[in-house]
Length: 184
Image 1 (tube, rainbow, N blue to C red):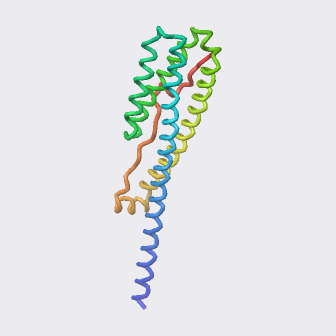
Image 2: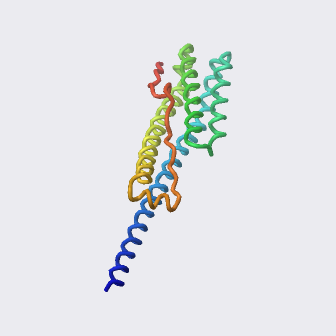
Image 3: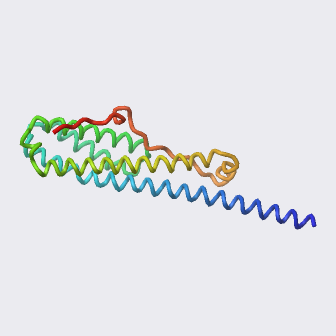
């Protein structure tokens, strides 16, 4: 009789550990998937920036420094595609800042603001920024759930046993937290 009770306890404990392990794996996979979604949106933005720069070049050729800064920030962000969320966030914040300066320059050129290609590019970039924001929000929510599960008892015992590690949030810098004002 004692053997059966012991066997039932061991089986229940094994089921509990397996269930906790599977929950942690599921959250880890969701976090990886959410990170991939951010990566896809950022790739779309990287692809859009050269078109935007070329359109502005045609009207504002003497604003070379601004155009070069945008190109440089884009390249740095592309090069960090395998980086940590903190490294990627810093590069993306720099790119966002240079894009804001590019739109500020465009205000000095009424013919550029009236250009249909430029307006289309700006609208596409705006929708991409919304998609990036939504992807960031989802990623951070999944990371929050994952990190919480790793730290709360009793799942923290299973997490430590199988060496689950916390993930970094994709956080914005202070200047990025304020909404840009781009007026045309």
